Amino acid sequence: MTINDAVAKRTIALLKAKNITQYRLERDSGIVHGNMDRILNGQSKTVTLTTVYKLARGFGMSVFEFLDDDVFRSDELEID
Image 1 (cartoon, rainbow, N blue to C red):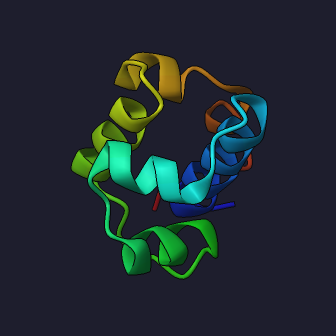
Image 2: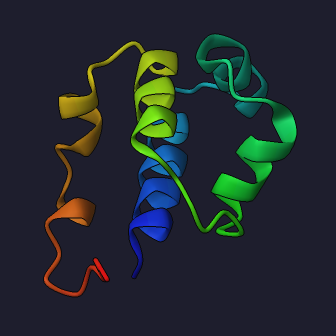
Image 3: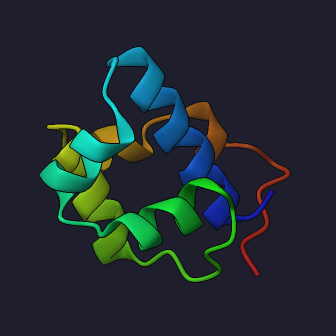
């Protein structure tokens, strides 16, 4: 799993857990619809720290809270 896949997986899990729509997350994070679709569908190959910050802000959490998940601790996470 790539970092981009992990961000997508975490985002989808938070959308479900917090009962937030993709539209609301786009609005609250400032990420435009097309970019959000590419992130969630795993088509984005360059999820930046800025994007992670915006996603966290959209969920009302810190970047640390967003990244505090087992998906980012996996030994199978590709970091190359």
